[in-house]
Image (cartoon, rainbow, N blue to C red):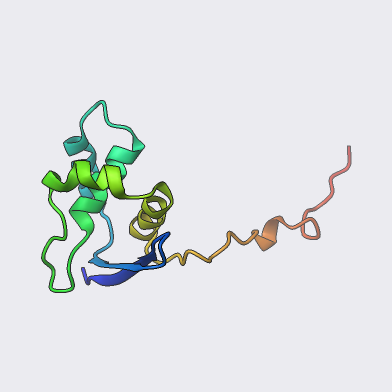
Length: 113
């Protein structure tokens, strides 16, 4: 799989850049296993990020040893944006969910009662 560049704008206006390949089901399962049975969604997300975030040359940006620091320092809104990028890499942050045209009220057939 080819690595793709991602970037998130932090609350202070700086841009955080990282590279990653699409998240696989196996990678997600491994990250959840490393997080442990008592882990919450945030712990799972941070472990996924640790596993996926790379430098441009492909070397890891973080290790499991960075977990506590990341948990303490990453703002929740930034972590949410990172997860959207990793879980849905083809979706832009600005993409809004478009209604299905097949479900619009103009296309619904009326039934007789």
